[in-house]
Image (tube, rainbow, N blue to C red; front, side):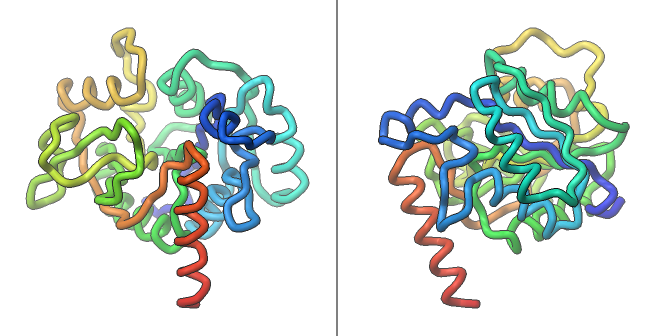
Length: 236
């Protein structure tokens, strides 16, 4: 299956409390990195990967994000879910439970990476079996509480949550149809717990590496992402 026939999903319902504490007054999806809000950067990445049908969840205090996207990406088929959720896992399930059957490419709104890196991940993930779930992983650790990942020689996930593999999850996933709508998923609190359950329940899990993904939660993360954006522009 090509990347262009896969539906996209963006999880953007977090409160962004640390960014607000650092002085940002706009909703987290609208926090700018090098002049482009986070949600715009993720949508740019999806477009670069040929994905134009996307489900986006924002919380009820972020309705201006809907207006911003509608005004700046009018050609995209965007299905908005406006709902304040209790956890990242609830947001994940809201997004992945919608749309037609098949794999889905999902990104958190705060996973900042260059478009070419996102496209490379999408292509590598699409080359894996269609019934596999593929995690973007990175050696660039910017999260305060990273989820560590160990891969084998074929980049299949051997362990989650155990330091030593040198890689962490990067907030981008190609989710199999089965993992989108599991028939017997337990009651869990966080997305990382769900990923661990998928592994334990026999889901085919792979990891594909994106060298640099910044998890934008704090002012210093914005600065890191802007530095990377500047390097990319200078190379171009």
